[in-house]
Image 1 (tube, rainbow, N blue to C red):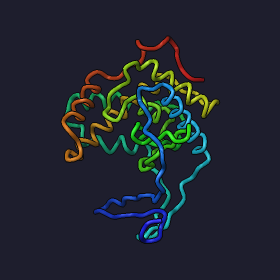
Image 2 (image 1 turned 120 degrees about the horizontal axis):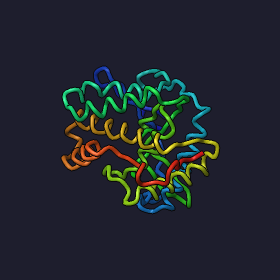
Image 3 (image 1 turned 60 degrees about the vertical axis):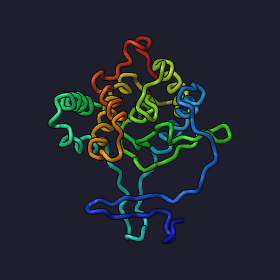
Length: 237
């Protein structure tokens, strides 16, 4: 529990309220982004999380600031919020228009996603994967999480993206056998995620390095494409 006796703590700053969950420490080692076995275990954990989240509804929580309603942002909410940040940059406007077209036609249903399944938020403990840092849960499409898994913590793609995605597919199938994940959705949502990260970094320049911004912009200059790296019609069904 927190020092004030709550499992969930809240702090207000202006019009924003930030919520944090009190947890215990978890032993383990970091997931190795370049290790297919680790990636497969990682994806299995994400599949199990997605399967469990389908029947989960956020509930109100008690904090020292009072009761806070159980609501989660949608990917559309996050996307709309960055439009003012990118509107004066021609490259970002173009990528935003492309992402908007995809999101407008993306099929239902959406679900709760982790929102930030980067390697730093994963531990391998006793032969299983533990997912950490649930501070960005988002109502989105399942491939939104798998798309983030295509980049390491420094926003660099895997050395062999095709093999990396194959490991993700194999693991996700173990955790959620009935799901359908298409490579095109992973590709489109990865481009969406990269633009979101870049816009968020522009909003918080103190927390972003030039190297980080350069890497993200280089991905935006050459939109991620798996089409030429994978077998035709590859996907998970």
